[in-house]
Image (cartoon, rainbow, N blue to C red; front, top):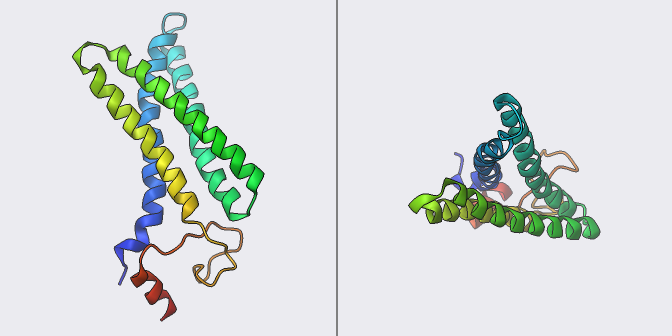
Amino acid sequence: MVKISSWANITLLLVGLLSFLFLGVFKTWYYQELFIVKFSYFSATGLGFALALMIEGGRFAFMLSSAQDMLVKNEKGFNFGAVGSILFLLYEIKMCYSMGAYWGDETTYLYVQIFISVAILGAFIEARLCLMLIDPDNKEAEVGSKKGSIFFRTTTKDAALNETT
């Protein structure tokens, strides 16, 4: 029988990815409207998509590399990634205000709050994933997993008991 708690780690990773995709979609529309003044519709859409993909892909890459740095005990890399993630989050919050103001009218505050919530969710998921990491040589590591992979602590005592029996 599969315990729901065993899905927590992959769920965190997927929700983190979805938060980046969500903001990426709105950024694509936002950048498209900015670029359409100087470029054709097709070019503006492509540029908006590429820019949103670079920024949100960068945030997702920082999330994964921070987890990997934590795993291999690369303190300098982790610290650099943490600073990068904080700077990306500050940029995201600034962009959330710009994107919310773009849609204007009485819903500006609602858009800003949604965008900021999603950006902060992605940042907290990154931190949570890093905190859940364990050393692959530890006895708590999953049986049959490859060395060098990212491992996570079990999230409940029940899951830990089931692994030892």
